[in-house]
Length: 248
Ligand code: PTJ
Image (cartoon, rainbow, N blue to C red):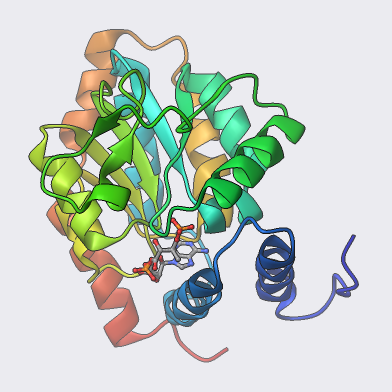
């Protein structure tokens, strides 16, 4: 569906822009999502546009957390829905997690459009529309979640999340997994597991690790969780940005 030549040196980045643009046209992604995408791209460029070793370790720790969880939930916003709808459905199936639409700029139209988009990509049940509970400490619209979804979850994956909400969810005692290309963002810093990687690469990578760990015992999963060092992961990403990845 895209007219981007595959041998173009910036193929992935052009494809991403195209998907976000299409997301806006379909009423899935907000206009602010375009700005967020631009910001993410700049960080991705500085990180070398690849999954670093520490981001891979974070993805494995995320998979272990999701597999150990009582009730894991994957949060979906307008950018996530445009970029990785099928990949989020696959991850939810691999770890037995719920999918919940949760928007920073909530409108009923966009909630419905995203839920329908996820169903088109194979989701059987999409949460977020009931909005019968709220996250303490946030303004009304931004606090809305489902009582049997994010509100009840013990482990939540929140990709590209706003800093206030990431902090409020962590405050509720939830184990938070954040995907964000900016290692200095407040959401990355408040996460138990910050995955500093492009969502396009991060989500399939967590799924791959989850499949690899599918037969692991709880003890083995806990070892994976405990051997992950969030401070070191953030520092490694920041170092890579500051020191550069060499000539390209
Ligand atoms: O659909 P909504 O209403 O829920 O709104 C979603 C956005 C993303 C617009 C909203 O949450 C927002 O404004 O987020 P921010 O504060 O711009 O933060 C987005 C973060 O995601 C930034 O730190 C970006 O660097 C990062 N980011 C952007 N694109 C990607 C990304 N991280 C990983 N992969 C990306 N493709």
